[in-house]
Length: 485
Image (cartoon, rainbow, N blue to C red; front, side):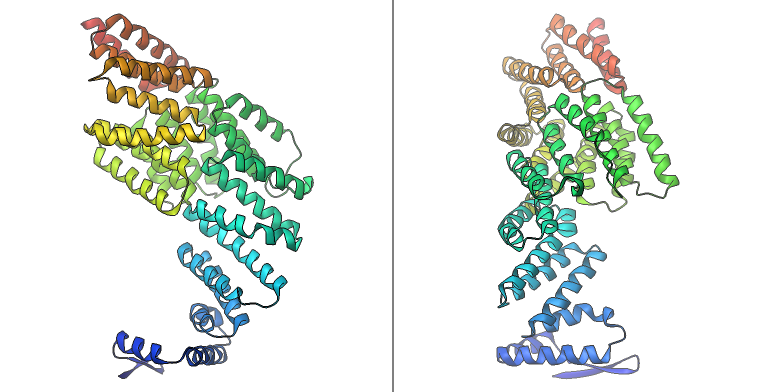
């Protein structure tokens, strides 16, 4: 049953087959197994006392299966920390989860609550945030929030509220976000507050397409006192959201925004900073300008740097759309479907699902599969309505109009009209131009020349004003076709 082999200067013993190991292992009484695991752990600590870090995983395994709760908690937590350092986040979640199970048997209630609260925070950041497991994170944070409050540790209670504001804002759960922002501000003194909490409030304004409110809020925050050790990031976040809102509303040109991002990229290169965000932001600008090939190049650079799931989301959605727009339909749809499925599996939230559905609908429409296109756009529209996401709702109406246009032109016109009305209400100028272009093309296909010319002319005016170069070219090509015919 046993075999031995030399490893370096030592002999290693093992079973000939894993099944033999399993049979022998499970034939032992539970208390005998626990005792042997503890003895093995003690022996390993003695033999490798000068380099225990190399044996953290094995010590976590043996003590984790022993009756020595304190040692189990110690090594399981260390193994989770080590996995985080190596960015093995699923493994880290497992280790911390096993530690939580062992902590449940602690008889000292205060000690148990302290250990559990600490482990919940370790599972939140970085593991769940990098993996995008937001629904699960909210459920666990809410479950143990009362314990954090009972312990009276303002710092840790504040962290619970802060991460709840982040998760719920990213998921589009805006009422919950505001509830936790209020609770955070009541618990944490003004001078000790993290700038991420008002950033999450700004995310609500962005999601709800309240761009004027977003700009006003961000400017007010920038006028506040600086934040030690995080001032540069604070300024970058609020200025970035102001820039995005002004771009959507057509108050600054794409080229001006692009020049700012290129200057930032040069600065980050000189300072040896992470370039993931810069490449993704530059890619997003090229994408919205219709410069698909340039957008693809930037997003592919961003994704090559093993970013967190937040940057993966920011990059893969427009990247998949750009692939579809450049005729790489299989590649684009495949990328979007994979990440949509992952988003649902890990519980990233309906807001992100909606954001994958919209370009998927366009991709399937380009492929000629109107059923799958409609399935995705209907899913996006349902989420947009339930979450109060007017920009996404308007985009969904436009895509539905494009789906219906060949066979049901009156309903397509109604959908384009609804899309345009929302875009004008929220002042999303570039998106307004895209809807005018789609409506104009649909009119052109149905021989409604005067109506087509009116919509295309309005689209041309918008794209010319904003400097949306490629969309402007396509609009002028469509107008030229009208004149030729």
